[in-house]
Every structure is written in structure tokens, then in C-alpha cells.
Length: 187
Image (cartoon, rainbow, N blue to C red; front, top):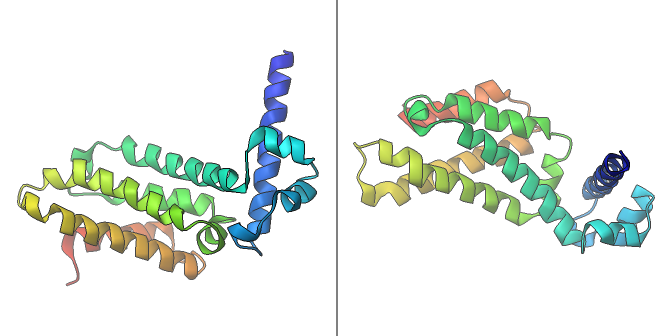
């Protein structure tokens, strides 16, 4: 029983540290945020912070890693054959995941971590090159890197514009737009 209490306290403390960091990220860049600022806002001492994270970069990396892992679970949930002619479900669910993190995602992207979009690109690249493009036999394998770059960069840029515009467009409409562009291009 005591073990569950400890685990719950650890989870609560980590959550408190993360919330403090994300709050600071609203007004500071990731490089400007210090352990002292986080501890003050989270009302913990530095020793407690260091029990959970070696530094602020590791904390940010953990937050980004959790979000990328959440997206990875979404992407891997759908068999590639199911998405060949209808990628809407995975696009919709991925943008819905982003929407659930609307309270901090814009700040993470703007002030935080240039690696965030790179990790997202890497995840999409892997899925497209290894699973989705090979199913499209009408495409030449030597063209895969170009097709992949076009789709991934376009999707990432749509994501960036969506964030810059305050995530006002619905996830449904955004997913439908990306699906149409990916499958049909601009007509």
C-alpha cells in the first residue's frame, strides 16, 4: 500500500514540475528557463527537481518524448492497408491528439524545442517510407524520398500554420484537407 502512495506522490511531483515548466514556457524560451524558476513555481526544492530530471533540457525532452510517443501509438494503431486510400482516420486522430494539448503545444513549438518538429518529421518519415508508400505500386521506389518529403513537409507546415492561427480550424476539417491534398493534390 505504501508503494502506491509513493508512486502517486512521484507522479504528482513530476506533473507539478511539468506544469510549472510549461507555464514558464508561455513567457520564456526553453533556454531562458532555470531550475530555480521551475522550483519556485512548483513549490519544490532543487533536490526534488534533480530526483526527477538532471536538468531543464531533460525535462523538455521528456515532455516532447511523451507527446511523440502518444502520436506514435496513434499512428501505429492503424494498419497501413487500411490507410492506403483513406488516411483520414489517422490524420484526424493525430490532430485530435494535438488539440488535447492545446494549452501548451503552441508554446512548446514557439519557445521551446526546435527538435519537437524534427522528431515529428522523423516519426512521419518512418511510417510513410516503410509502410504507406510501398503500398502505392503506381509510384516508383526511386521517387519515394521526394514524395515522402513533399507529404511530410506539407503536413508539418499545415500543423505550424494551424498553431499560428490559434488552432481555430477543426481537427475534422484539417484532416479532410490534408487527406485530399495527399491523395489528389490541388485540383
